[in-house]
Image 1 (cartoon, rainbow, N blue to C red):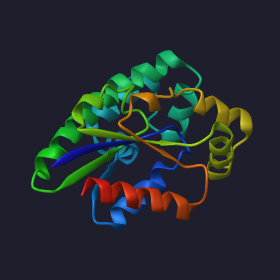
Image 2: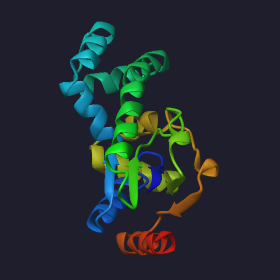
Image 3: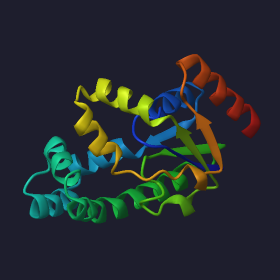
Length: 183
């Protein structure tokens, strides 16, 4: 099995790539969704988050952690160990598959990069990501930039970079070419 990490900054197009890969029959795990489930269903995570932040509401937590890097780090210290466990279990459960793709914006920041054979980075120009994020989240430029500026640009660490500055068809073609080169 090839263990593939899929990453890139917010609004770069990771979700689109995930959908392309899912339609091709690959196992794709979105760490953002897993972390939301942990906040919702894991009693240990819930109690730690409530104790530290007095809320487990995603929107309220986002406001707190994107304005205070110390609080962001505290939330990460609660969530990241559980995500790492989940990744390792996913690889074990699917060891007979040809590939498992784990998607997450913070693969490098969380220290998960050592878990993968290859890391694919989805990249897009900052101004394109800003427009996408403002549209997707129905938010203003200042709020969108605050979220964008919380992430590091780790593309130079990745094994493969896919530029996503165009349309869906172009992205789809790049992902299909990548799949053909892997398998």
